[in-house]
Length: 356
Ligand SMILES: O=C(O)C(=O)CO
Image 1 (tube, rainbow, N blue to C red):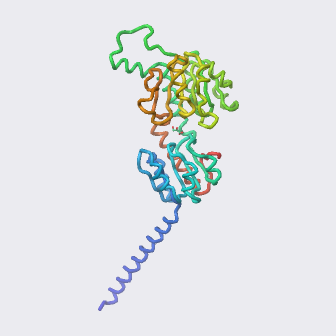
Image 2 (image 1 turned 60 degrees about the vertical axis):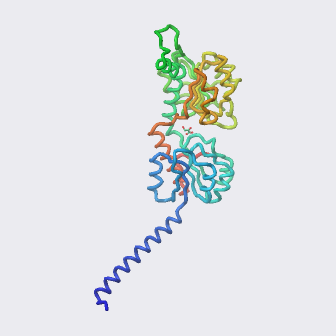
Image 3 (image 1 turned 90 degrees about the vertical axis):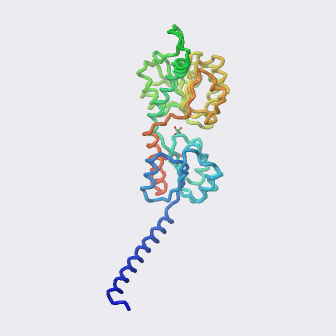
């Protein structure tokens, strides 16, 4: 027989157990009620921290540095409320149909949005976040580095020094082209084009010219750039930097018609998207001497197969799409993508929303 103290103690234990169980049950129910979010890549820590600390979504993560296989992605998006993706994921009608009507927001950790079917997203009323501005400086910096590496033949020079090609100082050996007194052309003047021009100006560039679908006087005024036609841009640029977004209008815009108008001393640089260039035409322009050199941070496909003919050319410098690859920038991109996603889930204004 229990005395009254034992009964009281047992009561206390039971009540406390009941409360704990109740709390857990409520927590579980709340968790189940939270929006479901699929993150298609191990994005940099800043973004993941923001998502986790928000406590406002259930996150499932493809915890890898490599892209999620398409079939796995299609399986995982079914029924999600939000999707945080990177530029390797094609967000098209097939995926959106499988995702279903819960999907309210797609947030891409990229400034480029050519991997998103904008019409399909718009049709379904899905909001889209992206990450402009935070990568402008790192992309501009890398563009300048690539331009100098190409025009001053740095990769060839390093290889010659390392591989015994360095005989003696020679008068015309490894001579390249200099920015001083040059004309720099920008195809697609936006924030990145302006940032590139600002960095190039101190090298003694004489003139900046640009082309776009229409003049952009406010941006152009920052760098005293002159609006010209695509033809003039090709003919007059000593250095031609491609900074436009990939759209149906810009796909393949850098083709033989453009290269044939360029000077045979010109350097062509692309840090936007590979598909704005017709790579066969570029190969011909480089091998025929129609242009002097090309620096590419982007190609079709990516990665470019190691046996691709462009890799055989000494006057073509190819980087593996690293323009925004600084630790600070990639963290800022992931933080912005996470904040865009959370704002979209809450139905609030995003920091950077793409107009569809
Ligand atoms: O953000 C983008 O679109 C990129 O290409 C990454 O540098």
